[in-house]
Image (cartoon, rainbow, N blue to C red; front, side, top):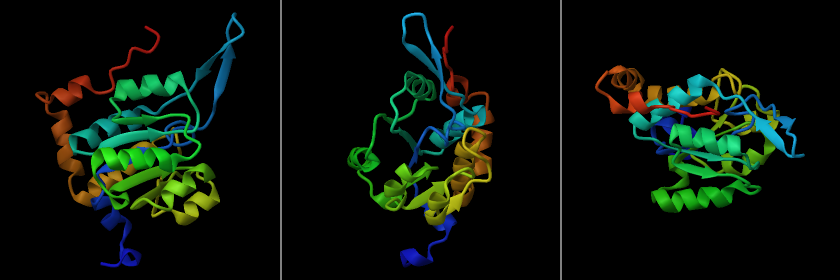
Length: 198
């Protein structure tokens, strides 16, 4: 089948690795900086709980998950740890460098990757991967090349929208949810267990 004729569902069915930008995709894009008494700062980001649970569903369905972001943030590192993210690349001005490393580690092709983005820094990756996803709040240039646009905005469930679409396209969303809800499922018991500031 020629790539020009592939539907979004066709593309979603191929995906092995789902990659996310962070700011504006898994958060609403706000970057709150609170100064401390030492002249440094504490960065605050808010993540949607729906996205976190969705990542647990994705893992149950056999997907690998990655974060690729330009900023360096302890908050992102903590969230990635809590969600057991497979690949975390911060400080990435040229995100295709991280993509190349993930392709090598997973022994897969660009067609096997999905990427969720919202701004122009995401365009080089979105132009190459098999399934490019834009958030509802994405810039016009990003939406123009996306194969799928999430119903919800970044930080409000867009990350979960991407997962639900992929699993629904495979015909396994309902059964994956039931697997998650099974009280004997260890993944559900250990999903999104964070320590935060406790």
